[in-house]
Length: 230
Image 1 (cartoon, rainbow, N blue to C red):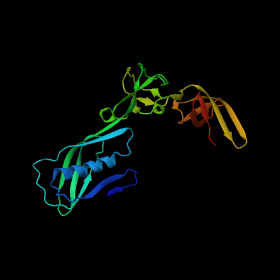
Image 2 (cartoon, helix red, strand yellow; image 1 turned 45 degrees about the vertical axis):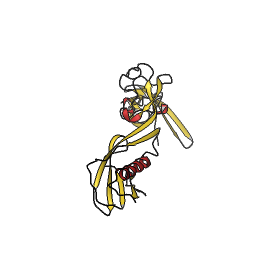
Image 3 (tube, helix red, strand yellow; image 1 turned 120 degrees about the vertical axis):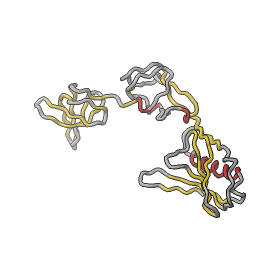
Image 4 (cartoon, rainbow, N blue to C red; image 1 turned 30 degrees about the vertical axis):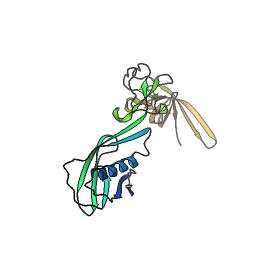
C-alpha cells in the first residue's frame, strides 16, 4: 500500500507498506520491500530510471513481523547512492537500512563550442549527450528550451555540461540606456523616450527618468523597451 502525505509545500512524502507472509529476517523479504518502494518513488522521473538494492547486513537477527514499511530518511531523495529504511510496524519494533543505487538514464545538454561570459545561447551552441544523470553535477540542463536565449554568466568550455545556475536571462535594459517607454490601456497607447536608471532583465521592474525629469517605473522588455502598466 502506497501512502503519501502532501504538506503545504506541495512535496509528496511517501512510504510503502507491505504485508509479508515470509519471515522478515529473510534478506529477500527486506530487499523486495525496499525495491518495490524505490520503484514507486522513481516511476515519474524523467529519463529511464533503474533501481539496484543491495543486501541487508548478514549479521542481523530480527524478530517476527507481519507488516514491513519502507521509507527514505529525512532529507534523502531517490537519487544516486542512498540508504533505504525498512521497519516493522506490526508484530515487532525494529528498523534496518539497506544500501541502494538509483540510476536515471537520460539526455543532457553540453556546450558544442566554447561559450564566453555574456554570450546568448542559440541553436548550434549546444549538443545533446546521454548518460546517468545521477552522476552529473546538480541543475543539469536537459531541455533545449531551458538554454536557448539565455545568457552565459561564466565561461564554459566546449563539451562541458550546461548547468542552469550558469545561465540567466539576458539583460534587456542597460543602466544609462535610452529606452522606449510605452503604455497601453483601454482605447489608448502612448510612448516616449527616457533613460534607464538601472540594468534589468526582461520582466524585471526598472525605473526610467523621462526627458522632463519625472521618474517612472515599468517592466523591462526585450529591445530596450519599458512597459508602464496602469
